[in-house]
Structure formats: structure tokens, C-alpha cells
Image 1 (tube, rainbow over the protein chains, first blue to last red):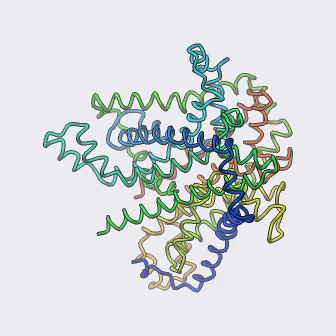
Image 2: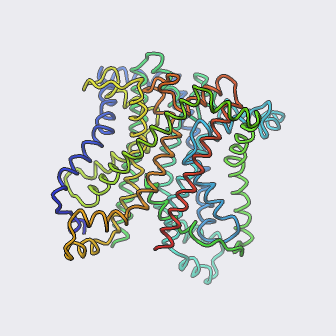
Image 3: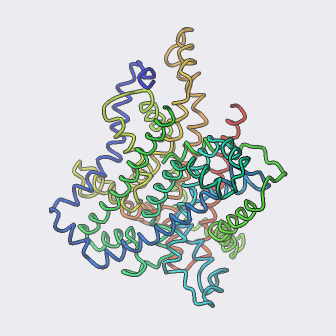
Length: 276
Length: 282
């Protein structure tokens, strides 16, 4: 099918060259150069970087907050997607818009909003939580909230179209044969949306690992305590410790490129299964 | 990464006529309650707090913050560069989508993956990446660090996937028969492009442009290393907000943040209008 669509226009080759040149100059070459710079002095300095306890602490914090954010976004993402597709109620469009909102809000604004609500002195939630002895701001909970906020729409936006496409026939059949609500969900709905959920999960994983602006505002950026991997890259770069900055940046870039390849492979597999 | 695609596909959620009738069961009603509570704590109340904090200084305080020369320069720079990058994306994004759908060449899958890289790459890494090729140690001798071109470059990098990914699925679904019919009736390539292909793609291009504008306006991480954040010259709105926060001027930070929220809200509203128009036509 793809070959039948190939254009025979005389513009075909010039446009191809333009597209490849633009993508190459803007993305491929610069990204390749970071890997090149990282290994310019061999593998030794890179390995040394990942033995530095402060670097390891930053990576650990990123891993912990990413895990929380992904779990929260998968649980609420699946729930909200089903609520958006399978049910009718007043205010549904508002809910849909609310889920989309984080896509277009600046990370710095996200950070500011969390500071305003969760600060211990004047925050609506921060003050009562401080009375209970719970510290949110400048600690891991605020970092989790910030990363969850920015990755919120990704799972929902992947599952909603899949749920719409599969329809309700199988779910209704299961229900009419006596399956309970939870049984229908685990045996019918969840297997049907598993690919969409997989893409959403990988995308929110990549987004959570990479979050920078919102985390910078809410974390306090205390070295070794509330400094995530992306904040560590910034600090190392400004401290002229470029080797270490490049090493961590390469690690983060590798993770995100693996995530993209994983989604691309999953997607083409799901497509070919659909076609057969 | 298929953000645009899912948005367009998800349009019928929004396109459905809202019925006052509720089909919620006991369990789903509880789930809705918990979800709304979660979204309120995470998104709605914090963003509401920003708007309330912005009102602290009254209308006068609002206006004097936005007309502060440094803040006004940051807002003008951000909106201007975001608009320029969006125009670039409308042309190049559509061309790239066309090449990916209608052309076939070795390495096409690699190009597909490279296009999604800016979507998944941490923004601070994006800044470092651009600095490598377009910074002081550039191997091709192009140094844009600490200039306005750096802002444009960073915006172009982070917004690359949006128009491509919204236009591509629509172009894929586009009936090639209509094009061939136009050709066989004697239309030139240009006429077919202007009368058949582009009108069909227009809603997707508009949606991609809106997403790319919104992303550029709110960008922060990729600029930290490359733009130099020079007041009145290369400082963008997000950096300005952060400076206010760091100086303890939360009220002023909230005012500028509210402006960005208004822009975000307008973009979402525009997307909704475009998608509902498409849903009605389809």
C-alpha cells in the first residue's frame, strides 16, 4: 500500500533532501555530538561519574519520583479514560479539558502553583500538612507532584482513542454472561487497551525522568538531597564540570531514545496485528 | 509523541453533545469522584491559587508588573519567537509529514524516530545538545549562544514533532482517489495541492500550529544553557517568572504566570473549536 502512494512529483527528491537536512541539522547531528563529546576522553571519566555518590543520589531521586509518577498516572489515567469514553454525565467536557491542560502549561508555572498551595506558611494544603508534621515542599513529595502533573495527559491521550475504537460489544457480552464489573475490566477492557497503555506508560516514564523546570521550582535543588538528575546536569554544567554533565546527559538521552524506539516497535507490532 | 494524532482522534469525546442525563453507576460514580478530587488537588486548586495570587496587587499591580520593561521585553520576545517558530513549523512540518507519507527511501524509519527525539529528550539535555553544534565550540563555526537566535533554535527543536505528528495521520487517511480524479480532470499539480490536499490538511495543520505555539511559549528547560537569560535581550517569560520566584516576589510571578495560563487556555479553546468543526464536517 505504501508503495502505491509514493508520489511521482518532480518535487519528491528536493523535498526529501530538505526534510532530512532539517531534521539532521536540528536533531540528529547535535544529539550525536553529545555522545561524541561524552566519550571524547574514553570510557574512564564516564564510569567515574557514575561512581560519584552525589550523582548516584540524583539518579536515585529521579528513579523514585518517576516510579511514583508513573504509577499514579497509570492508575488515574486508565480510570479517567474509561470515565471519558464509557459514561455520560454533566461536566465531561470540562474533565477532558482539565486533563489536557498540563500539556500547555509552562513547567515553571506548574512549580509556582505547587509552591503556592503546598508551602508550609500560607499554603491551603501546606499549612495543615505542616501541622501534621508532613513536609511537602523542598522534599520528595513535591517532586512527585510536579512530575505527575506534567505527565498527566500522556496515558489518557493514548488510551482514549483505543477505547473508542474497540467499542463496547465484548464488554456488554461479558456482562450479559454474568461477569462482574471488575471481572469485565481485568479480562476484557484491560487486554483490549494494553498497547495504548504501554505507549502511555513509556511516554510518561520519559517525560517524568526529563522534567526540569517544575522540579527546579519545588525541590529547593539541595545537592545530594532534593537534586534530581536533570538538575544535576545544570549544576555540573555551570560549575564547569562539563565531562560529568555530558555523561549524565548521555545517560538521560539514551533512556529517552530507547523509550522512543520501544514505542515505535510496539506500535508497528500492534498495527500489523490489527491488519492481519 | 503521537500527541496530535490522539488529540484529533479523541475529538469525538469533546465533540459529543453533552447530555444532562448521567449513565454513571454506583462504582463509576465513586471512581469519578475520586478522579475529580485527585485532579482538583493536583491541577485545579494549585492553578487557581496562581490566579488568586495574581489578583493580590489589584488591577494596578497586574498592569504595572506586565509593563515593567524587563517583563514586557520577555513577553514580547517569547510571543514573537514562538510565532516565528510556529510559521516555520507550519511549512517544514507539513513538508516533513508529506515526505514521510508519500516518499519512500532507505532510512525512513530512522527519520521517524529522530523526529520524536525532542518530545522525549529532557529539556536540559536538549539545551546541552544544541550548545554542542551551535555553541562556542561549534565544529561548523556557528555560534548562536546568548543571542535571540538561540531562543528561536531552542523553540524550533522542542516543537519539531507537533505539526508533523498531527498532519501525518490525516495525510495517511487522505483519499488518494480525490487527488487522482483532480489530475485526470486536468488539474495541475499546483491546483491539486491548493484545492484538494491543503484544504483537507488545514485543520490538522492548525491543530499542530496551536500545540507548537503553546509549547514554545511555555518553554523553559532547553533555554537555560543556551540563551544566556540576558535581561531585555534573551530572557523569556518562563525565566522571568523564575527570577520573580527566586526573589520572593510571588505576586509578580503569579501575574506573569496568569498571562501564560490565559495563552494556554486560548490555545486549548482554539483546538476545541477546530476539532468540533472537523467532527461536524466528518
